[in-house]
Amino acid sequence: MTPYVLVVEDEDPIATLLDYNLGKEGFRVERAADGEEALLKVEEETPDLILLDWMLPKVSGVEVCRQLRAHPETRRTPILMLTARGEETDKVRGLDTGADDYVVKPFAMTELAARIRALLRRARPELVDERLEYADLVLDRGSHRVTRAGHAVHLGPTEYRLLDFLMQRPGRVFTRERLLDAVWGSNTYVEARTVDVHVGRLRKALHRPGAPDLIRTVRSAGYSLDERA
Image 1 (cartoon, rainbow, N blue to C red):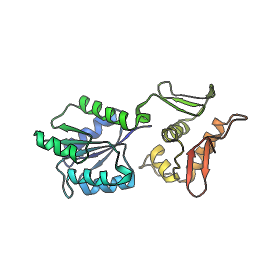
Image 2: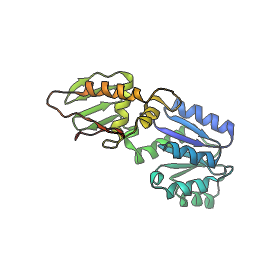
Image 3: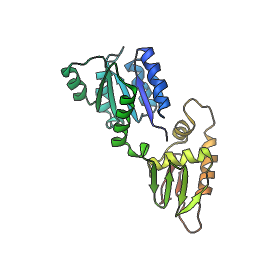
Image 4: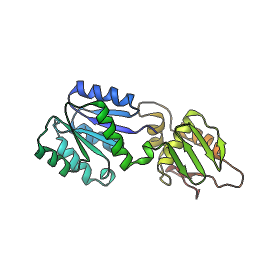
């Protein structure tokens, strides 16, 4: 599943540069132009990583970082501070507020992308690992293949993305709306009922006689990958 990076940057040329280059690196990028907008976007959907400028309108980057670290949902979300400040004291202050890393402008995109991947690898290895495993199910991102108990599972593109997302956090229940955002994209307008159709197809593809159903339906809540289903 494509890692979701929130870029919080008020300088449009830099934000556009980051959006374009991180997109080429395989990240899903959303942008916020000030600290207030950033907090709203995080509330709507928790990013896998936040690229946060130090100097922002309305709410400063340091204050955004402080608020995110105070909230249980974002306490461990990787935050990489991006700023023109290069003094040692400013670096220390940024890290003291809870930032995980610090990059000074101007920066090289190759280094920035490498630092982002390093943070994701520590915080959410399932996002960057080539191979996901759960129970007798294996999803190999490198070969784009899925097997269950050693037998090939043939999936359509949407079912593959759906399974990838569910395997990142097995046991967690996701609403239809959350699955729509993660698998279809927040800017795609499809009905929530569409999720039911594709979950049904995924469940059918994963079925093996005598083996447990790995997709759990939670009434009025959503779906999860759970071998206790």
